[in-house]
Length: 94
Image (cartoon, rainbow, N blue to C red; front, side, top):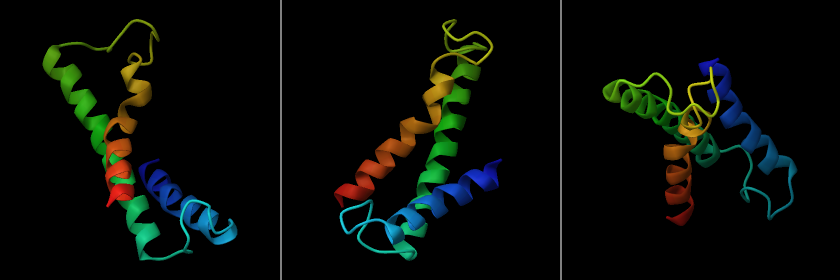
């Protein structure tokens, strides 16, 4: 699952930027920038998941809420996005 997720995160933006118009995602095709962005976002998504799990472990909670029973709570649905969105925002602003 991990390797497929990383590969997909790198592959889809590359294909999108190659076949899209000039204003889509990026203005260049499959290159080092697109591959490195996909890799960095994949790693940051994994880190977001690990950080949220560590917070739950330190606090002694199994689930972050009872809103989604059996799924670890609401935070488990979005935990990979927390760091990935910040990294992507920083990447685009530089």
